[in-house]
Image 1: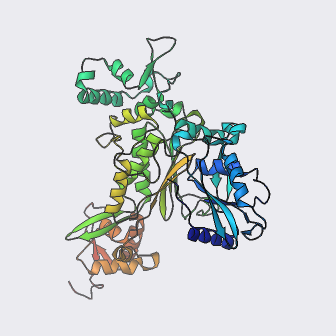
Image 2: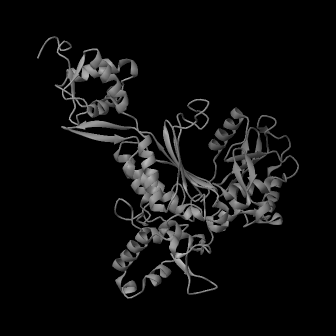
Image 3: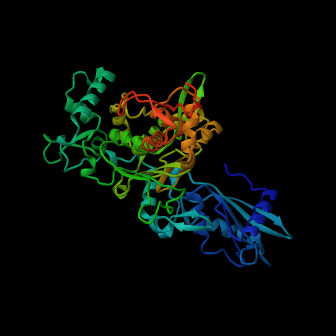
Length: 506
């Protein structure tokens, strides 16, 4: 339900635009001194296809958002309604005539169109030439891809059910298929107990019969992505790219010859891509430690379970339409955050506000989702629960780690989920504050507080690599400050302060 803007809110909005000198994402000002501007229909379409917005007639942007002399709000009201009739579906605004600085403005609240009714477009121009979206302080015409995604929300997409004509049953992983079929029989004995393996795969839309020769079975896109050996043989970009950047944006490199800390292209079926992407994230993030009672607890920058859920969701819910098959899922790690992006925004009735709401679920790829529900995961269990709980798990894992909630962003072309890096506790910062100039003294201090320590224990205490610790320990041994407790290369090797460093004490 669209509500009245109210006079106080109107003054606040206009004051803000005067300060910045521009319209805003949610408010458009038009002079309309003598007639309705031709661009109004584009703004009506843009607000309707987005989050809604406010149109104010009778203010001059070029004159510092001051009232237009001689503006007749009452006569413009009928003309405004006539413009709303030029769109499909018709826009139904709330129009008010509101006093402001000695004159009267026309203020129209434009509601966001229901997802099933989008795109809202200028009828005379057609869907692909007359659909707009709000971008900053202006209206941008939607691309064909974006219009198709809006239309897609009106019906259930079936791109995941598409037969891959060049693929054969040999392109499916026998172990994955075997476990998948076994699980289907366990879950649905009344349906699948007496059916053949082929019938189960057909029934779950993992394969289809070839149109020319029904005796030949060919994988569907969903079947290939979930159960295939190498789906990228057919769709090279249906993969995951992982990139670790040294700074907070992509422009900051390490040096002239190296831009990334790590960069990987991850391929294989979805279970493998999830596992390998999670391994890449784990390898490149810091894992700290906190002491709880007498035990040490590892605390990573990003909870692994939350990351796994985000990657699985990205691969399950991404857009698999032909136009999107040239775009991959991206996992980008920066100095202060982790971003997971997939082609295609939220689908159906899902919105940013409804994410994590129990009972709210909308699957763009219904067949793929059903297959993944019983596709085995390398570490045990199955790839997804397919109960609309993935985002809830992410929120709970971050909350349990005392981290900020995830930050979702959905557009017509992509969905992005951002995890802010965990803030390290003062004790962790102190523990890991060994820079190269103080490593020697820090090692000596650590050894003075215990009878001996292994290289691994010094690594864990400092957060430094094994090679760095070994280099410093060897130099201290040469200086006679530290001594080994075992012969060289002993697997039980430990180090302690030499007698002279202990002040002559045994």
